Image (cartoon, rainbow, N blue to C red; front, side, top):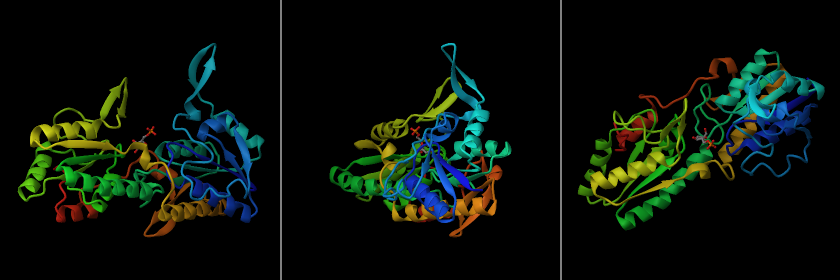
Length: 359
Ligand code: F6P
């Protein structure tokens, strides 16, 4: 392999630029040329590519977002094209591969979450040498103990809790903080632990509203006139309606940011008789500069991805296990999830210090 390409797919996460920088610097240092594909897999179909140099990646280490641009819409295997004034979906993977061949690109590093991994796995099956780097602030990719971006998101949410703490205490209110996490409660769990939350509600444990109210009242009885509740956007109550934050559009289930937290705050106010406010952190958790941990992890991942290319170890995702970077076959993890389980050590620790998980 003499020339590789790199792309970023799906939602952005702090550390994307640090991975790109590490891929470029370590590849150039080992005699490879590197191309950047703009705007995820869409750019592969549309031939939006440019060669990356040391200068292209100068100064990007601490910057959030991705210098290459990204999108979570474009799938070359089901790609929107305009035919006779109508948008139809076609398999454009052949075009995407032809574009790489034309630029003499022999391997591809994809940096992304589950959607990107699935597409990467399909291209690998078609014979394209692919290496993947796991990205998502949600930390829900299997095979790795950490995705980059997660540490930053948790830090932002924990800082928000610290800030909400003082205003909650002053006003004798319940502050509900809604954090990201459609299907996984890792951000809520870690941020709740770090920020001293009283209740943490996650998608993996359908919550019982009565338990949440009981916790708040029990605190009141002990003279604690305020409470902090963290809810993951995808958390939902046991029984009752299907979900607070989930909405169904056609055949697609989507999460409505702000749905879960706001509704919960109203219910707490009604049932516990204590003034409640909701803060939705939303994309604040995804933007901005990565923490030192994420910069280091991203750099390790970027270098390890180039190591895979040079070793001919294609079809793998680089991953972190027991603080070592390892390789995991993409086929083993694509389409699977990494969720908080009932025996999770952090859940147990949370229970031991009195956090209510709504069960
Ligand atoms: O998967 C990462 C994530 O940040 C989720 O936590 C969140 O539900 C989703 O992306 C938001 O996506 P979008 O950028 O499309 O609003």
